[in-house]
Length: 243
Image (cartoon, rainbow, N blue to C red; front, side, top):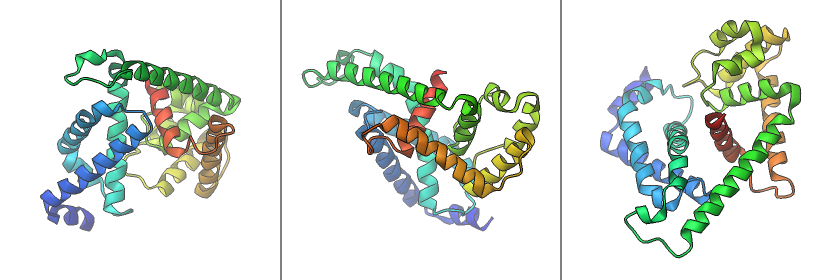
């Protein structure tokens, strides 16, 4: 409660300035990674700002002080940005350049087409990297989506938990606002239910990190710097949307 009161006491103008700065930083990150076209910067920032303003009270109520306020804002804004990416990405690359109000640089349409082709190829590689988990695939997808706070489908819970899917769903419950330690404990409880194995939250943390590292290694190949946890999260978001 004291953290919520702190939020209420914070000057709203300063609060919005902080959020606006974080929004610009998050969008810039995705633009630098060629996920969002530069021409969409303003629209994406506006879309995220509108999402934030509409959900501001709920966002503040969910803050419990387990991290710095700016870290919490960044996580929330990052999730909102991914929502915009999932919704708008097909439109960004389907619309002809000359439908925009400014004149693009020569060859930009061809550049965007090449970029979309590259993204599709990367997603194919990502899907193949997931398939290589074989019998662990359902568990990996479910655990990583829960870990990264990506919406989970009922069929994904069923794929891992089988007939215990309802009990599994009850254990997972509401993911929003949980600290990583709480996430690991819930997943440990899920393992006990489904696999009849008693493991601790720390063991779940190490297992999850190992699967993430495996995915990064498979995606990077010889280039050890291109993909990281953030790009893996984005690709998992896109994969979830396209599946």
